[in-house]
Image (tube, rainbow, N blue to C red; front, side, top):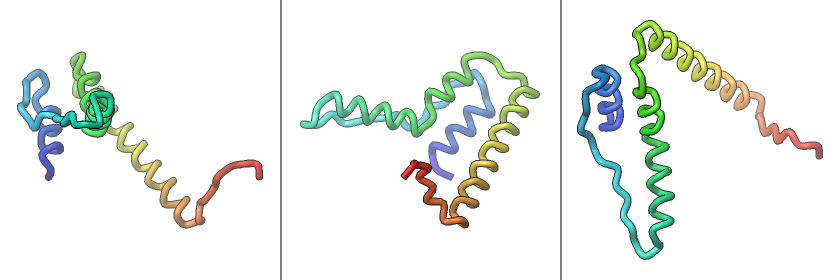
Length: 98
């Protein structure tokens, strides 16, 4: 289990508690501040920080959480099936007119 997964699991198990984890760091080099900001935004997106903050803004009842998790799992399953079907059929599927 990676460090990020462990931190996410701890956050989900103990709402309201702060969990110290690996800080997101981006080095500012000769390429400039703008580029560093873009890298930081990308890191935040891939780590799921904003999604987690949004989710934790309000208390989520266990029953609501269970339904949300089931919905997310179903969405992942469908996406996986679609990708598998596309792979089997060759699926280039540009969808263009020409």
